[in-house]
Image 1 (spheres, rainbow, N blue to C red):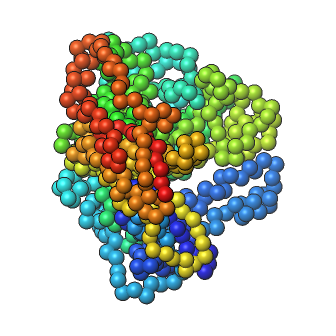
Image 2 (cartoon, rainbow, N blue to C red; image 1 turned 30 degrees about the horizontal axis):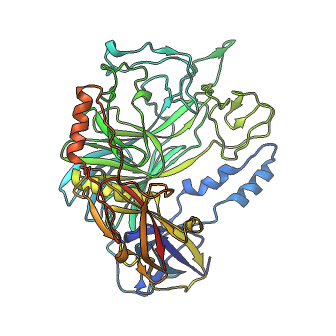
Image 3 (spheres, rainbow, N blue to C red; image 1 turned 60 degrees about the horizontal axis):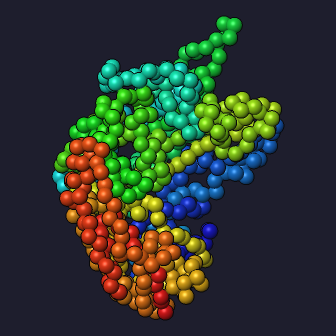
Length: 592
């Protein structure tokens, strides 16, 4: 859009979002100006990095193509964007904001302070007045993060690495696994689509011939440091103005099949064979937070569960025998993983489900990508060796594939799957970190929906609700999909973001539905509470199930949770509903 465009951003969250950074690819370099009905907005233009430019080219299937054809296809696939336009805009609760953008310099004399960047011979520092993030020029990586408000500092490094996938055989135990709890280390189980099983605890590095790079971009909306660890592992560390978290945008792939920087380990008639090894790619964060052997992960986005290295919960046999020292300490991370030392917390908020672990004090690692060479014989009948083209050879037998997909009878010459994701890093005193991580999880998973129009389309921000919900309450659902089955009633579902004991926001909160839904066209006139799935009226006379603890340790855990929880349910009395920590309540509501 060389003449500009308008963009409408709809915020599905029932709380307003201040200073949301909308990042859009544009085909015109140089200054841009964006404004809404209140005036010009903070805006910056950032050159598109080479890594992003190269991504569309990975979709090219070069099989049976001449050099001329390849060049023509690459030209057709080339990224048409030349820069990224970042706009800081305020979003109303459950509402719409519009902004119009055009190429050209701003006529306003107002200048945003943005995020300061300071450099010397040894370091690069990003500082937005809330956080100070330091990078080491020698290592070309993160060095530390300081929370200026809390006056707390931790070292912080990021490490890319990969585990060598097992194809069946023996697992090497680390020194941290006591000999008396080791299971037999040998098995014919291979790592595959359903099974994660590395053949050792060693996290391998990359081709030493690759020279890591570091580049700095500064602007009034955000400043960032771009770090390239290898040809197939990179990340951008970004700090936005006014943000109390650090954003890490990572890109993984295409993972190579061969590993030529290692000496050959297999030969055929004295001829070395390629090191075609499966690789489980990991991004690890190391801090000076003394977390010991414990970290926590969310349970399907809800309660946080403590995890202890080489152990299980009190309902498991003790001692718990270890059969896989790495894989046995990995857990699902759907939303949040965190470590703390009783004073400060370091949390990572993810935008997609990942496997995560803390294999040493102060550390959190996440498996962000995998490319394997063996089938785990769990039903897929092929290795997890995906390509960007999605192509494979029809005639290839299971397991008969190479670097560019199946190579049984030709037809696929395409790069391995490449993925990109985002982590939000939170470092703060425990109470503040616990509050922030839930809000950030909502924002990273439910960004605004955007639509585009010609330039100069502007309207005042508009909200569908009259009053934002409290910070601890989520508008889980509001839909008319089932209205014809329920006499015109819409399904309304509210939930509490926090669990009992999680920050000072983990308290019951009362919402007056008539104050929230009072806008013309969405004015509530009545509501009836139902079961969670809205297929029956709620039954307040519930059966009381007696729970029996397996042992004293389990009983102690249940008693501790009981002391924190709010067990008495508050009956619904229209229009007011009281929602307890982690509670979800559903209604059939009428609107006019």
